[in-house]
Amino acid sequence: MPTSTARVWTALGLVYVVWGSTYLGIRIVVDTMPPFLSAGARFLTAGALLAAIVAWRDGPAALKATGAQVRSAVLVGLLLILGGNGLVVLAETSVPSGLAALLVAAVPMWLVCLRAGTGDRPSTRTLAGVLLGLGGLAVLCSPGIGGEIGLGGVLLVLAASVLWSLGSFSASKLTLPANPFTGSAYQMLAGGAGGIAVGLGRGEQHGLDPGSYSTGSWLALGYLVLFGSLVGFTSYVWLLRAAPLSLVATYAYVNPVVAVALGWLILDESLTWPIVLGGAIVVAAVSVIVSTERRT
Image (tube, rainbow, N blue to C red; front, side, top):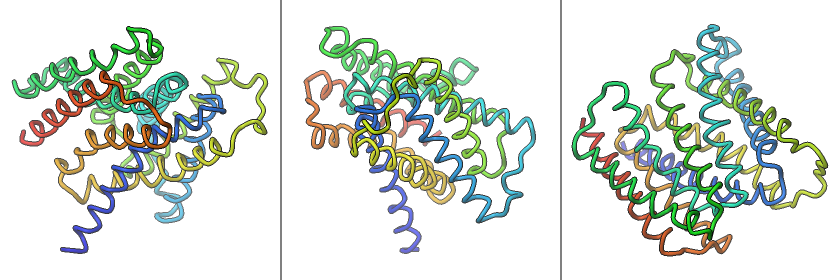
């Protein structure tokens, strides 16, 4: 039992720190690299590595899936990775990493709205959490409305959080490959290919000069591939099977705190009153929603 508990907390710590640090990594990558092409390369590489690991560990047969399962995985991958992650990467060319993380923290709120739209009836406490969170988002959006930060970037992150929520919600309704790692490999490959296609469509390849990319951007991209996409995700999938969902769900309000702290410490991002106050409200709202939902 102690060993099992230690493994659970080790995996949870990895999810806390690694996923919380991805916003910092993205901000460093897009400092010198094109957003969609770098994000596409990240997930294509991570998807190929994950598929190779699955084939090595469980045999090539573990990668087999029906046509319907592959199509479902592609759809979820496009929503999560191209839409959810891709728009965050684009937004972080103008939005601080900590603010982006706090805006993305609203995902549990959008999930409640999606469930309500399909006939589910959230509790009064859950709805109160959603309303509280919307108030926090309004405060977080004030720097964009006031012109201190590009409003377009703020809206991109909000759109990304909605698409991530839609992808997460769809994943629970669609038929995906039985092996979760196989499904994730297909999702990463689809999302990565989509990112490359969008990047080419935006003309990011024009004047492309890998020699001009900073060492920091290369290191950050490698970190996102190995840790953000592989270590963090595999830890999360393992936790879903080895730990109570109520414990795993705490990442939703720990990650933004980690992201804000890292952005402040490493990138010297300002902690203005809208970010501190709005972030505190959103994190409190998410904690209310998570703590309420785990009782139902």
